[in-house]
Amino acid sequence: MQKATRANVQRVLADLRRRLTKDDQLLVMLIGHGTSMDGEDAKFNLVGPDLSASEWAELFKPIPGRLVFVDTTGASFPFLQKIAGRSRIVLTATDSAAQQFETVFPEYFVKAFGDAAADLDKNGRVSLWEAFTYASASVRQWFEQKGQLPTERPLLDDTGAGIGREAGIRGPTEKSRA
Image 1 (cartoon, rainbow, N blue to C red):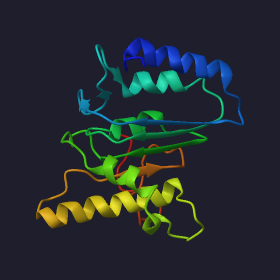
Image 2 (image 1 turned 30 degrees about the horizontal axis):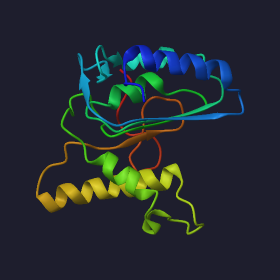
Image 3 (image 1 turned 60 degrees about the horizontal axis):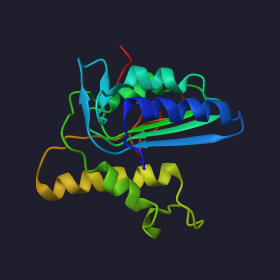
């Protein structure tokens, strides 16, 4: 098993770029720690030097096919803004780079795929939207049970606008790319 280093991530994505076709789908899920650099960009913490959201976006540019990118870390919102695009679904645990606290979103997102309650249309499969909806509701409930103001608000962008929306809300949120 290789360490999650900047060089290894770059190497794996270069290899995938050569092997994937326009008919393929790539799922990338970041679980760990994220930090905001300046409110405009963020980093996913790796062993050694980190990769910023802008650098991840550059690595994904030449990848053919559909990209599903899930960043479950604190300060993940800039990833949504930088990676969103045509044929891409981007999910983040936060709606702001300022939300840098440890997130509970990944626990519930992963749990959704094994919980029949997450299968909203009862077709025997949990879609990304259903997992996102399940995890979002679970995050809200977790903070309510603790009696705390939420420090994370998951967003999903499947339009390429880089804006995102919360589960249960139609259309983009009021967040802007500016």
